Length: 111
Image (cartoon, rainbow, N blue to C red; front, side, top):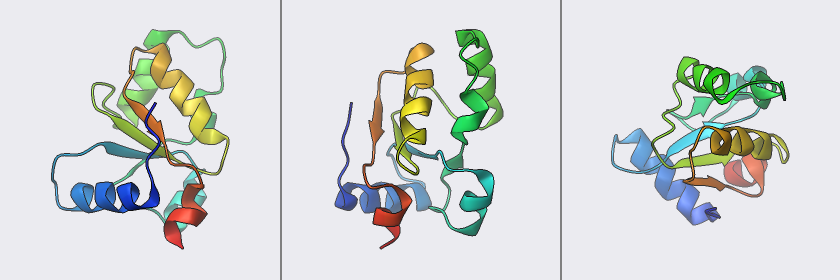
């Protein structure tokens, strides 16, 4: 698992904004929080969309596809402290091994 620093996150956000190579950024907070503030061009996938522990990898893949998450890319997760881990577990369930969590969440990034 990657553990990006705040400096890394700013670099990833810059690359995303400018359509440069870099990881996709998945914001795991609820939609209303995402709508109020988020990293431009990040993907919103609230962890609640993946809470069913009975979801098969095929069903999880459909949720990722619906939200625009490419499971072949490196994914950096940002959220509110717990939600990132739920999404990371679901990504691993469908075979995505290139994941990272930005510890500190949105508040640390935005400060």
